[in-house]
Length: 608
Image 1 (cartoon, rainbow, N blue to C red):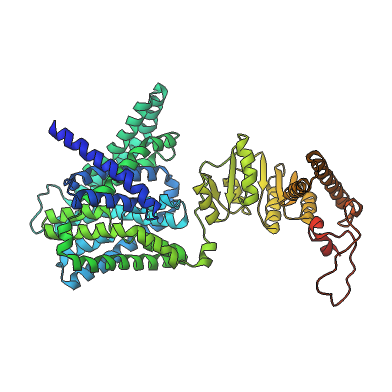
Image 2: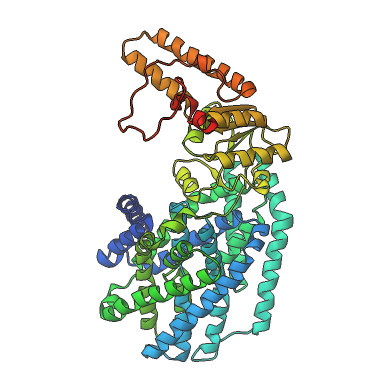
């Protein structure tokens, strides 16, 4: 009974710490991760309220397992194959080069011998999937080009833990008690992966179909947990990592019709356990080891982060990343990772180095994790503004296809989309600005990144399903290019377009659009009406005047379509008095009395 009370009180402390620290650090701009770490350090090493940090850490590592399962759900096998160059090329280069450099520095400093320096160097070369993915999610950068490249590197690092754990027995001070050969271990691992793929292909979908027919929501949640934990355990028994098993299970279910429901079922468990993981890292920090080796840690942590950042930056630039993306990746992944804890613990148990050395390495990794949010914020100061304007994102049109395909999401489109959404209509919106896509995501909008002047992008965005194509781009030449492309490839498509000015309106009508509207016309009418009302004109009379101006404008457009831009001058309200310019012109310019730039949108001057 006393043990149960202690467990409840510890759980209460952890929950209270998370609830207080995470929002506070988020409000300060430091991120929730640093808040969880700080709460763990305060509860454990400082206040000594919880001393079983290692046990909590082992349980909370399930948060990383669930995270990789959800990541796998977002990655179809075809998309994973498209990322193979970054995964196996860039990721492998990062682990090998960073591990070699760090191993050399550790051996050169005399801290560890040959075998110990290799294990420590390659263990520190691994970054934290949990930390990096959490930062990407908080910034809505998961689907950006740099976010996908960072994930590719992290995925290879998770794979690298397998051979790194395999070489520890070979470096051990005494012969390992292993009854199987390396070839047999490799065969077991391959068989486990093959069995998982077979189960995912032939068993999982039928299983979820049967459960779905019962309508038992709680059983569906239990089945989701069973799939994740079962796949993770299978991989662990085969000598691979649990996280890798969960990731493969997610990939296998990425094309399942139950993908979204599985993600919704797992997400709460993932969030709680991942928060617990970060707090457990803080709980397991040994302040005594930090105090005894303070000078070494003060030197080692910045060196570790600097080496990893420089290697990552150089490799990303060599792989074709822009400066800004390379900086982001370099300062997103400079920390040690959670798999480093596993590797250092196994190395200490095998006698590769002492337990004190393992604690020192764990402290270095923990402090590098704590500094990661700060490093990520520092990346903004090192980015080039020009590259930021030309930033690109990964084109992902998962779930696209609606009655209305809206191209461009500037101020005009944002207002128009509100009317459509309020009317209960689904809208697929694409925009070529990565910054605008990310900004829209912070307000809850799902905007697809893509260039509307490309036919493949329009097809991927579901133009064949759209009843109306709304072209709301800002630049006249871009609007014209999109309309010509749609007319050429989809002649039956209904096109509604945003017009730049009066001359552009006439051009759009000549192109055969179904509807067009000048971007400032209706707002100008409303502004004039409100001004009249403020001057004492009756509201109904002001509305009547506004409607009359609208009718006159449409009649002028019809005449101008037939006779040219100068037709319909008599329909304009004008005064005979022309204001004198402040500076007398050097030569006389003849100008008709009714050539008003605001009403003609500067097109009469062009026509003359």
